[in-house]
Length: 148
Image (cartoon, rainbow, N blue to C red; front, top):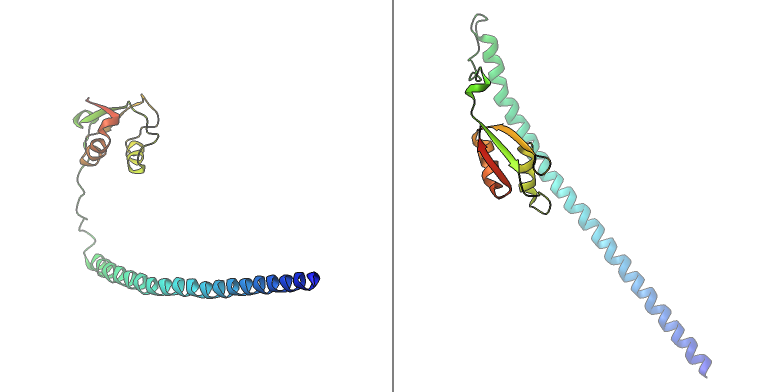
């Protein structure tokens, strides 16, 4: 009688294990197509947008090319803003990194790298531009700044 009870328990346990395995397979089978469908839908949405952007870019670029061909070859292109001729005319800033960049925000680390600083107590000279001023302002607590 005891052997029969053990055998019955073993059968019940096996059936439960089989059912759990079947449920897991069914759940994973349902989840996999959903993920694939989401990826396909996302790529399908992105593809027309990319194509539309490319078409718009080529449409904008096409008139420029035709206008350049129709222009007389004797005409010159508009001049770009002239760069300062001498380094002495450019205002520069001397920046020294006095606090470590370790443990800082990623954007602050990027500002340190953008200013050309790699290690503590390193000093670099940068041109005084609005872009550099913005990076300096963001990480001012890590720097010593002097006019040159």
